[in-house]
Image 1 (cartoon, rainbow, N blue to C red):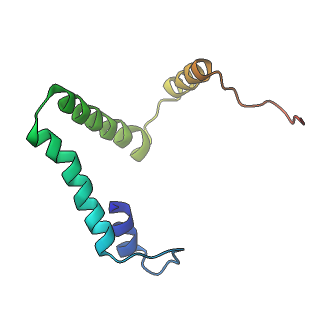
Image 2: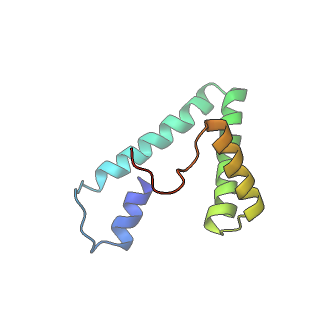
Length: 98
């Protein structure tokens, strides 16, 4: 919802396939914040601390590797190899017709 509000402000002239009133994304954003914060305030538990920690780690990893594009190629190639082996997915080689 934040992205929708930012795009509406920064790129207002672009064509959008659908439009909603500004109140709708604002309401959904407030509802999402409430639904994220209320369980932590109402019933603090270690599982919520773990969830917040994972979100912070995700933001940290995104900032370094995606936003600043500081991805070491060795780590990326190893990660690609491990995920291909783990999920048994390999890109097709050559032009193959079924």
